[in-house]
Amino acid sequence: MSKLWNRINDELKTRHDSKTYNHIKVLESPQGAQIEVGGRKFINMCSNNYLGFANNRAAVAAAKDALDEYGVGSGAVRSISGTQKCHIDFERKLAEFKGVEDVILVQSGFQANTALIPTITTADDAIISDELNHASIIDGVRLARAKKYVYKHADMEDLKVQIEKAKSEVSGIVLIITDGVFSMDGDIAPLDKIVELKEQYEDVYLAVDDAHGEGVFGSHGRGLVNHFGLDGRVEFEIGTLSKAFGIAGGFIGGKKELIDYLKQKARPFLFSTGLDSAMCGAGICIVDEMTRSDERVKKLWENAKYLQSGLKALGFDTWKTVSPITPVIVGEEAKATALTKALFDEGVLVSPIMFPTVAKGLARIRLMPSAAHSKDDLDEAIAKIKKCAEQLEII
Ligand SMILES: Cc1ncc(COP(=O)(O)O)c(C=O)c1O
Image (cartoon, rainbow, N blue to C red; front, side, top):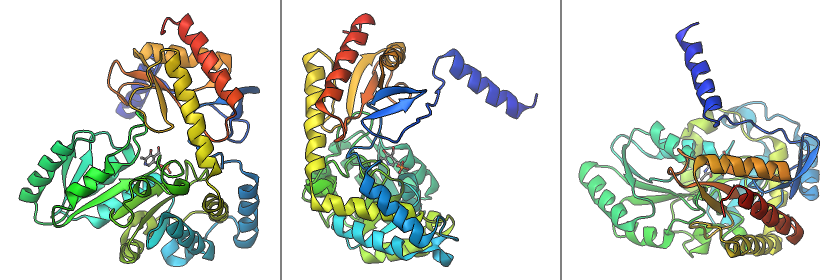
């Protein structure tokens, strides 16, 4: 066998042997509070469908209407002949909702980071990234030619040290980049303090990836920047449509000239075909609904608080979360795998999160409540977590 196939097979074997191989589940129903796998019904505690829009009937109908109007494919990259009117309508709608001058849509939240970070920085610049930032930020930073710095998680003293260092080592701009809500722990970036700090310097700018903050924080789910009252003071707002918005796609919001510039220069925009019309049609319908009513956001928080207080009352440690993301710390990696499996057998789907995604000894299962869950769903999930954790001597 060649070196290539040896390498691939060795890695697969290592994962099987260490029980870290990811057996990817195939769902036989739409996303919702309950889903079907292998002909069985499960309580779904592991999707990012925060507001329950993924199978919203009005959004599905709007997607079908857009397909009828524009077809299934946009035909070319958007800069050649692939920009359809629905792209522009959706961008305008998102900009209004987010309270930014303009928005550029890209194919995913991941692509939004790879579109923004290398495009707005040069080899003369510095990027300072929170040590716990998402993989797509890390990859976006890797693609950039700027000098790279990492600051300790949410640590303002260290961020100041890194800004001073970067300022003395580069001649260009300094870009700070952070997740809004950190998806493994559920804690949030101290955006008020970061903005206060960066405004003390010239040419220090801030990008916030609000993938898990949109639909969750701020008025009607406008996101973490809005939650902190910082509208207009964060230069780059990165978003994904794949979580609370319930569809797929990503976007960047900011000043008009920024969006104009990205549409001329961002490689994922220039060299990859744009979102399909169904996503635009559904997206417009969902943003309209979010603007009209904040009932789903309220329900999400009610459910998150109910789930987290129920788990805490049983003695579980939900770690640093201040958002609906609900980690349940179990310690050893093997316990996280065993608890996930036991819950699967009981009909509850959760995701195990282990080293190297989180530090050794802090393995956990992660629960994602949504506005779609009923109290009965949550009660059943809590009762089954209790039963399985007791059997496994976790509590
Ligand atoms: C902070 C952050 N950015 C980007 C992404 C990727 O978003 P998408 O699934 O739209 O590519 C995620 C998803 O996990 C995320 O948590």
